[in-house]
Image (spheres, one colour):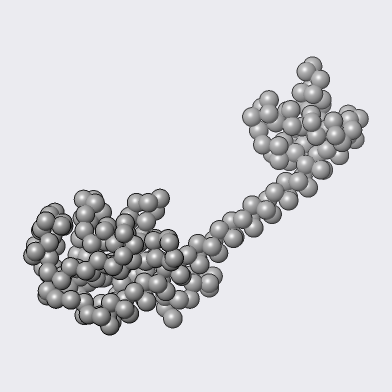
Length: 232
């Protein structure tokens, strides 16, 4: 429930991911957990169960090497039961992880259909497999988190689109009012008033909506618009 409720107003992605990392340590036979998310195709550390885990994840990102990097790029689970034999695969990461007391590493893709947005990373201080049951549940947890994040993104994009549409409608109303001001003040037709307003906006590198607002508020005299239209 903690990671699924993404539609409430107070939903916080960072808090959700931090909670998820902590719950993974409780749920699975691992000592540390963390999540990485991609921003413009670049992995970034999103949450960690501890400061030590965060440092190791940052090390992976900085050196572009490790289970989470391979997991994100392939969109497939990555399992390393024994990091002591992974030096050929991850020469830098394996050494750093072993020095930090990590013996096994697992990465679960955060993926929905063809879109992979990051990876869930699980580390353990003892070598050995994660286990079929834990792997399946970890993937389910990652899937739920992924759906939550993508749903939140859609909601935010929807809010932005709604705000943009409302702004466009308000701008249109202001422009119509400004056309009326010009027509009443200098006798232009509404069509000529609009063209004059647009010419003035372009000549002064201004937004049409801003010019309209200034005309309606009388900050910009309509005679300036006439000058722009006639070239006088």
